[in-house]
Image (tube, rainbow over all chains, first blue to last red; front, side, top):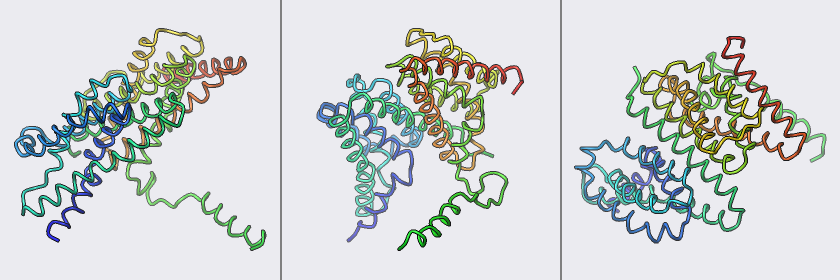
Length: 179
Length: 197
């Protein structure tokens, strides 16, 4: 089927591009808290950002380099999740369109035949978002079934580690290759 | 299968697991950076005691410091690490690391309880020095991403060790032991600061 190979190739993009994978995990940690509110209120914001990112990917990535932008967003989302927990839903919601914009711009494939572009693009979008399901599900289930305190601390620490890692990778990208 | 016939392969398996791998180079051959990053905070005693002290002090202060300090530390440490990666100089890094052990250890030893924001600011200020020291070595690491991941995890594990030790404060005798531990951390920091270690 035309474009089917592209779906598989696109699906692997988040694995090959750590910045996309990290942003997806940061997004999961951000919306995994206070899940019902953040999903119902945040989904339209995120999807609007994602659509804008897909539509404006070419001019956007010409002005803003994709990898540093994704890492900066991952660091910001991780830090917000670590420091505010589930208490800053408006701030988290405000960040969602930006994350969607970055994710959309990163998932648009290089120019090529329409079927291949569609397949690769859909695969990349699916690959980048599939990680959200287990993450959000696990967080929600943990909050429901386990004592809230330790789950909250665990998620905050995971988010702070992710933010720290994203920040260091951002510095490495900005510093450029060694030698 | 009898117990005797099981014993030989199990012993062999155990010995195999204990055997050190033959490495082609002096340091961690084939390392993608992760192992180096994991070991870096653990191999420097000044780093170790300071990071354990963060967890110890967090446990000593109780919630919310219990989680806030180990959350603030890696975030600010990464900022210090970014400065190191980008080549931004920071004066007296080693002295800052030693001072972090002295001050944090003293906080535990003297059972001081400053306001939460003061504790977070203090821990954050010292985290910059630790991060900078790691960050300057990061670009030369075999795999910078693996190195970053390794040292962030090792840092978290050291905090966890401190928190676990700090849980002893639930008992009166444990409280004394934790304060003595804080004193040892401060003494170790002083030894590094004055070139005795």
